[in-house]
Image (cartoon, rainbow, N blue to C red; front, top):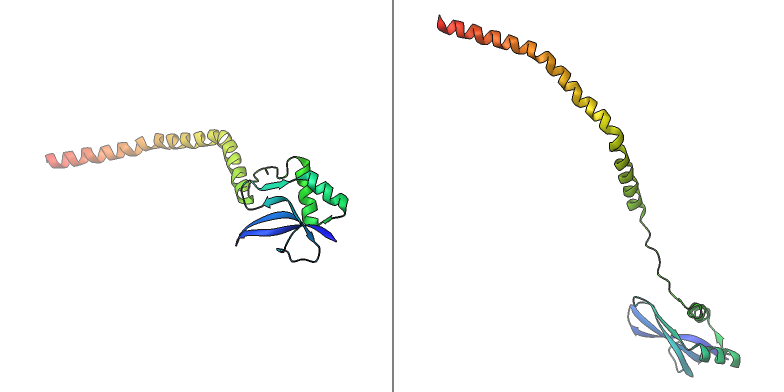
Length: 148
């Protein structure tokens, strides 16, 4: 019985696979009857090439694809085997973005409250001139003492 399998090639942690027609009982990397494509999952972007005419021809002859090869063939037939994924924002970054938006909205509301706080010290300064007069009186007293 013939199978359509992936045969592994490449260095450690850098696999490349050939899509081949092989006897079902042979080793994973053993001899194969025909090569119909290749798959490089570690490259960016991922590479997947399958000769669909040969693939269909071998299926018609009775070769059975493995689950992985069947899913790869389905992806390849779709025309866009590995669509780009939208970048997702991490939970921490989402919280930071949310706080930043809230802070951007708050200053508009808080500005009137801050202005009121600024006005309050001005009112307190109105009381200070009374104290300053006392300071001036002390200066006058010192001057008169020095003249004596």
